Image (cartoon, rainbow, N blue to C red; front, side):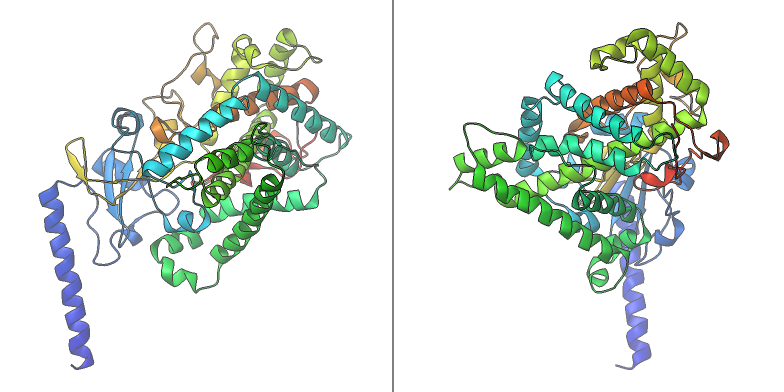
Length: 483
């Protein structure tokens, strides 16, 4: 067959498939969205930094687009997100197998079905046993906050970058939980691993990850930032594997020291059965907890410091409230939070305004889903866009301004807002939510007891509004802080 005829045949096939897919869309009553092109779908019509923004006004709160070979649904606004993740939790329980995430992690985060149920239930119960959300964990954070304060004092008022100090402190809480030990702020290998975590999350938001998600087989063979991420991931996994091996060699099933010991003990009990408690799931789940529990909370604390510098009167009012309730000597406790309404409101507003994961974690249609009169076909990727919840005008008086009054009533008492969903909602909400809330409160109150933060460029040098991306991590830092 001549070359021209072959090309023409290929084009006709693509057009035919496109027309058939449009006919199927009408028959199935799919969610509305822009008309795409054959093969590439809506890929070149979307803004990579905010893919849903230009579409929500035209198509409403449930939007379907096509990125070539993958259907994607965006859920926009509090009502749609809450209805899906809470009211229809079982339908939206699936986790999306994005190729980049599948490549870099397994275990609890992207598992589905019985594996997910068993690992999540075990992880939540084990973390509670080791004090997550209770006084045992509170003491660990208080002790680590003391190490952080002492390290900052060594700066003697000179400008410094707090990034790794904060990462070390937060990571050490996770390390106590899963590894049963903390690491020195001067441990070079530890610092290298923390740098890897930060870089990996930045790369997840990069064009390299987008291309890998669309063309995974091709990108496996091409150089680029994604290959750098994979190398960093491998070094982190080796670290976790070494720690698991150390625990296997010293395990006492009658006296578990941490999460790894509990998992190994459960694996021994279920040995010889078709169990989810095996080495691969242990390494992957510990890796998930170590990486996810480090950067998200440390970035939030770092962002809070920027807020304090940007708005010195807010910082001063928080310190005054802390002095009146706790003083500057004793440790803060979680029970103090109800007596610190302004502090609590500011810390909630920090999380709302920062919006660590604007798109939310990808969900997945494990079967055909009927939602708001539409059919979301099996195999569709679903993003509950948390940005659209945390910045929705119906829910927040000044959604694009930093405003602690969002969480205060007319008497300046703390008030809740159901649209405060930085950790998502439903059955796939973040397992470390209660730990993160505790860390953010205890670390920041401790820091404000001892320091007043500023930076050489002054408040005007602080930019609080980040670019839209998959994760908001370290770009907020002005570089150097003063105390």
